[in-house]
Length: 224
Ligand code: CTP
Ligand code: CA
Image 1 (cartoon, rainbow, N blue to C red):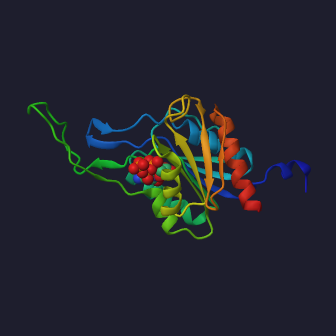
Image 2 (image 1 turned 120 degrees about the vertical axis):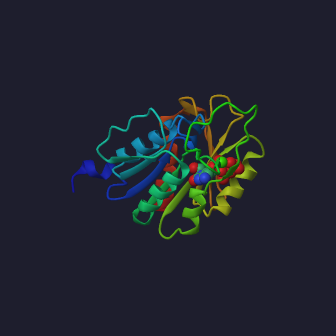
Image 3 (image 1 turned 30 degrees about the horizontal axis):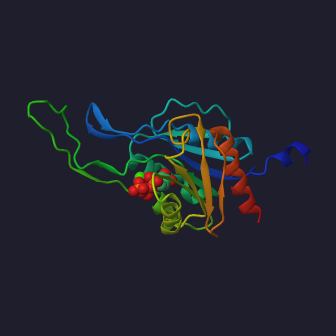
């Protein structure tokens, strides 16, 4: 076997990655969304593909580009679309990394016509979306499952609770209290918590480097 292939530790593996926000329609012209840029997920997809894996990148609306022959980009809009796409691929993948900022609530009804401003106030009734990550944890077989947690307070406690409740192998904690971290900029500061309870906090760094830290941890765990 050629030496160059030894540098591709994920060659032959399939990896599912979610990225970006979801948009939940209110009417034909309006939606509920969030400020996720998709950058973190796309950097993870690039790093994963560079390690030789076949990547299925399921993304909500973003301006990110995925120019890599091993990345298969599946574009979705709503949380339900993302749920359906993820479940289409899940049984065939070795690793799933869910970095998308999925809406937790969606309008209970979508108006068929543009809502007019004729009334003085408007109340929208929202209902919960399905938790995609939790659904994967519940039906997990051979997959190594990674989730994210975006927290503003009691960060470690909340992240550990999500790791356990959603049956994850690893959770990537983002604290919105760290300057330069979060889902809009080019840098991030994360803490990795695995299911054995090991905790490692990294410095603030470019998201491309954060992606490498996450993949290094996954490779370590898979080879252990
Ligand atoms: N997630 C998901 N489907 C949802 C909501 C969240 O797959 N409907 C995933 C995210 O992609 C992330 C993880 O769940 O990997 C945690 O998201 P986060 O918003 O931090 O946690 P929630 O479980 O949604 O709880 P809360 O927002 O109340 O903290
Ligand atoms: Ca949430």
